[in-house]
Each structure stands twice: as C-alpha cells, then as structure tokens.
Image (cartoon, rainbow, N blue to C red; front, side, top):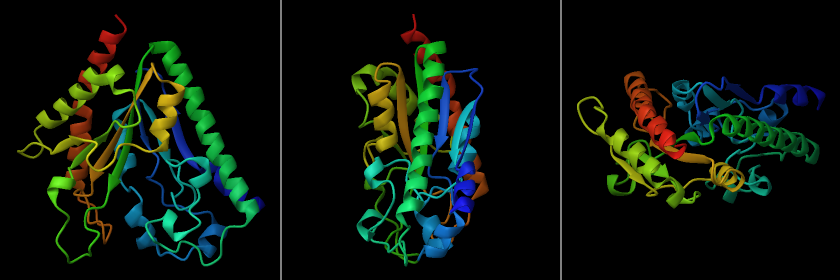
Length: 269
C-alpha cells in the first residue's frame, strides 16, 4: 500500500503561470492505473482507452494555466461526485465489469484522498486567479465516442452528435451568455481544413460534476465551458490518432481565446 500511495503522488499535472485569466483542463486524459489496481482490473488497455479522453491533454497547451490528469478515470473519475467517483458496479461504467477483484477499502480511501487533494488545489488556484483578474474562464476539455455499435458499424447520426458539444448546463447561463455565444461563434467561424466545425450547445452533454463544482464555488467569477469533441480526431476502436486533425482542433480552440479575453474585459469595465 505504501507503493500505491507513492504512485498517486503523480496523479495529475498542474501548472498555473497566472499571466492570463484562462485555464485549460483535461481531467480524463490519463491512462495510468496504480500497480495494485492494474492487477485487479478486468479491462484491457484498449477497453479503458475507449472511455478515456486521449490527446485532450495536448489541447491544454493553448492556455498558460493548465491541468492534466495522469491517472485513468477507471481509477477515480474527477468529473463525478465523491460518492460516484470510483466505478464499482457495471452501471457506473457503461456496463463494463471493471474489476475481477474490487479495490480494497484502504485503496479506495487513498484514492479519494488524492481526489480531495485535486479539488483543494483547483480551489486554491482559481481563488488566486479570480483575486488577480476578477473573472476567469475554464476550458474543460473532453472527448466522446460516437461509434458504439461496433468498429465496422456506421457511426451514430450527426444530428445527435455534434463535432464539438459545448456543455453549459451547470452554469447560471444568464451570467455568461455573451461569452458563451462569442466562444461558439468564433469556433464555428474558424477555417477547419476548408470547412466549418459543427458546434452546438447541450446536445450530447451538459457538463459533469467538475464544472458544477466550479460554478457552485465561483458562481459569479468563473465560467467553465465543458467542451466535448467527438472522436473524429482518432479511431475510437483502435486508438489510432489522426495528428493533423488533433493539431487543427487545437488551433480552432486557440482561435477563440482573443474573443474570450475581450468578453472578460467587458465584464471588468
């Protein structure tokens, strides 16, 4: 257990330079499992990767304040409330049987200690940024599967699966309406390899526990945009990345930053 506790010390990467009021996070990017949990896990690497958000961590480079989870959501899900953060039953994890031997109570307690540490660190950093800038924007970066019927089956309908889903269901939207609309408009206007991205709001996801916690704790000072990119930038079954698409998604996200900063400046006038 001492070894497992030591492994958790590298649970996430956090770097806040504090030069701008912009934060980019990738809390489902991680794939690691602590060694004792890896031995108990019933899933293959490929099965875990399908439900994780690989490559989202690279997109956090657009901001000077960054946070990336290194450990897998199958160890602890930072986007779920504490009582649901460890997947114990298939119903917690898309019907998957995660464990052939459940994590012990001691393992779960150590994991949840790091979960609490994560939220303590985020609170500390956001308190510092809001004290400095007044208003802050967090880009909560995720991805989602849209070929769940099988590798060789047709993808799910575009009508219910936007390329970029912007979740705003956890925020007081009236407080941030101009900024949300500006962000989505700028993202749509970006020249994405000769076309426009399909960007829609609250179609597939409205946001999880992480943005909800942010808006409950920083209601009037932090806007957390939950950004879910459809996995059109990779093969969700094999894990193969499409580097040009990944790079262009990052450029599209970067293109929204001047507009976000301008909208924040209007709030501080």
